[in-house]
Picture 1 (cartoon, rainbow, N blue to C red):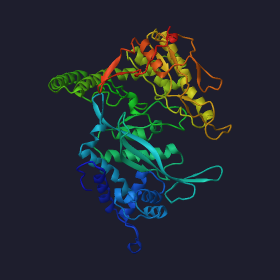
Picture 2 (tube, rainbow, N blue to C red; picture 1 turned 120 degrees about the horizontal axis):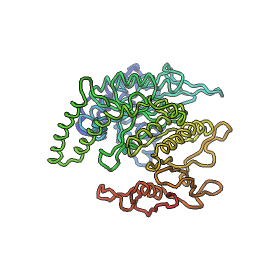
Picture 3 (tube, rainbow, N blue to C red; picture 1 turned 135 degrees about the vertical axis):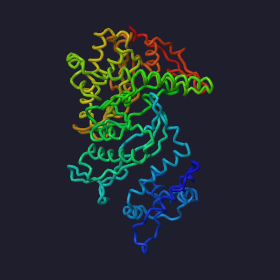
Picture 4 (tube, one colour; picture 1 turned 180 degrees about the vertical axis):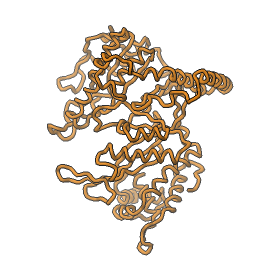
Length: 531
């Protein structure tokens, strides 16, 4: 592969062209009409333009602008029909094509473009690497010997191709860089979880083998929070992050790292996420032979050097690093004891439910939240997935509610009996409401509810909020608000007031603006919600 010296589209296209030219053509040379590099580049162009028919797309472009996008952008003069392209590509082995991803990433890393994705947590620098399954071909008729095959009760057969992709991402950005992908094989298992887990295991093994010096932190939803993948990650000494696992997992969504990011604040204010399987935080213990005293002395020396550098250069990231090293040291002494719930009495599990004994569940997360609060942690967030009920409301919501119902009750009662509820504000909510009417097909067994931002419910407990109050009212159809509306900025202003902060005066200067959490529009504290 030709070295990439600058990051432009033309340079990237030339890099692809060089790679495609080296791929062997399995066809009979006497019967070749379209050269393999042009076919491969056309296939890439189809993905780039995101149109189901590249030929039709180019005809429209030619008619509208007098020039083919394929020729101008990708330097391909002639292309086969969609069917011909598929038949040609069916004979191309996937391994040479797969290698384009890690090779391209390495080229981009060498010119320094990937440094923007590096994330620092507790003194450790990582490339957040998200695993997710992606179906890139689906048909009820067209298929090949390698297709995944699924038969339905109505006799219909579905054929597909799926990959587990590894992409490098960063919080607060839409930019991603594909790092690698592994094909899900039709021999990997009968269920989605089985086959994707098996493919993911192969993928992380290869990621570590091909990127030995790349500090990756594997991020995935709870589909990947099972054996054998966790064992493989531990064996390869790879960092990873998972989230609280809902009982029903038919529609899980990868959590965004921005939920724990510091936003426009400096990095020292970023949250620390706990893993839902295995050690809650990797490398929280000292290496063998290193005592706490030695670690403390080492950090004191690093702190002096970093403070000297900060005084000379003034880079706020240096101050962030000082704070993260100190945070890491504090976590080494506190996290193991914090997360060891074996000394909790049986009455605790009667309060939260038996699910609290299982790591990664919502109930276990609620119990850990109480343990953090009583140890002085000022802000705790629990994220519970799978509420996006566009289908199967009757099958999913009972399980979702079961996950959170007793655990939320248990948390509030636990805080109350320990004298912590008065000084702790518990807020429960989501991103928006759901429609009262059905979405999609309507059957007794399966129906869905779409997004509905006009009205939705949140609740608070403790922390100076008024108990036993229902504030606000919708119309008879639960479509819109008819009484006592509370804008989200009003709610934020009220929460800040309960925390002792005046939302009109509380601001942070960023990029020349004095930013307020309640925005620039007028917002009010809802006094009726105060005790």
